Image (cartoon, rainbow, N blue to C red; front, side, top):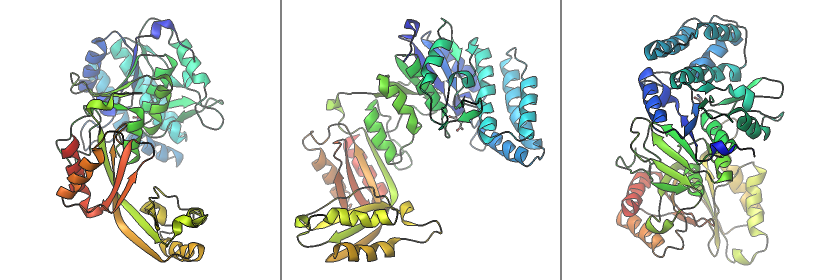
Length: 446
Ligand code: ASP
């Protein structure tokens, strides 16, 4: 994919909603950008919450769109949106007259604009404010981020960005949106400015993708369970994926792929504490000094234990069992097996049909018919905990430390699954034991 030599050694700096929520926050952004000439490509979100009781501009824009679709006046909602932008511009004292653009946007939303168009204006308009503040060139993302007819990112995006941002200066490319082949505005899914940042990083072959947010990196575990949870210093793309699968959310899921393709590291940083090093997300790391990087746990699983003597010798047993789940459109998470047992772990969300009726009785009945088991036991109320770390299954003693810690905390381990990726050990415990178990594992490995 295209790249100018000027871009090498350069950085993309993406700033999330809270980082750009107020004039005061934007001054922190300016200080960060000015501190490093390598920060040449800036990707801002729309203004997020200024306080916890505040509403994100993106959410207000979706509300405005709903009113516009019914041809109702935008009234109060628009006053809030426009007011936020105008206050920020006035407080920053930048020479920018947003009134004409705000008026035109309002008009378009009032005459029934699409949700994607309306939502994208948060980034599109705020990008102008950020560009004016930084003295950078504004690039409308609709010009350079292209979606194909099927709604996927078009590979020509990378060339478009490289060509448009080939100069020596600083560029602001608003996050979250692009345009379809017919010129309609389309957004990524929520939180999608992360994806724009990653795409820009790939297109310009930068050396680092900085993702500035309001925490000092990815924490080793959920701070609601372990308030003193430390940030992870270094984690691989793959390890992050394993942690996110179990509910740890820092980055948009799709934001890793474009940078991973080029081996560009992502650095999660805190706009409010710019001196904190944050978390580096890299292709490879030396696992020697930190075997376990993170622990993630989620409630809401049911385990179906199926027992049958000599099951291991019965050709097709596993297929027939899993076929039952497929027929009722239930996907499974894990299938730990023993000599005469096979368990299927299912997320509770999968177990209810469109009318909220549980499929479990049907599943049990079908299993009876399909594999004629000696016994079936359904265990609801399970929580899964993933302890993640590259090569941990090679590090002798890791599993023993994990299970000793759980035993000392008097946690009964109901299920064990050592992922074939050799990146994690998953244990199942009752939901009531989840917090105790996470704390025990954290204290052992942090
Ligand atoms: N403003 C968009 C959202 O709230 C995109 C983003 O901030 O990344 O989802």
